[in-house]
Length: 79
Image 1 (cartoon, rainbow, N blue to C red):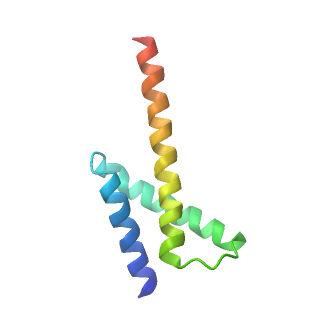
Image 2 (image 1 turned 30 degrees about the vertical axis):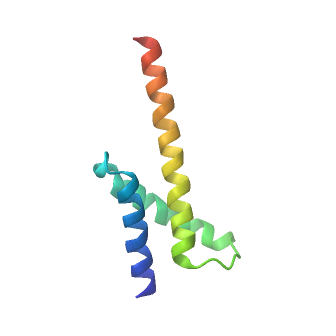
């Protein structure tokens, strides 16, 4: 039950930040869980599952925003 609740919290976290791109939310959510699965093998921290997942989601969301900004800059330079 706790893991399901953690997933709901991560989905809500991403939904608030990705209101303008809801179609990408599920992709980023899946990517979050994949990264979390990989990192759980190496992470020995004491963070709660929800906290750990939210940190993974935040990192991926910020990376996606940064990458989208770079693409927009690149496109603007060609126009």
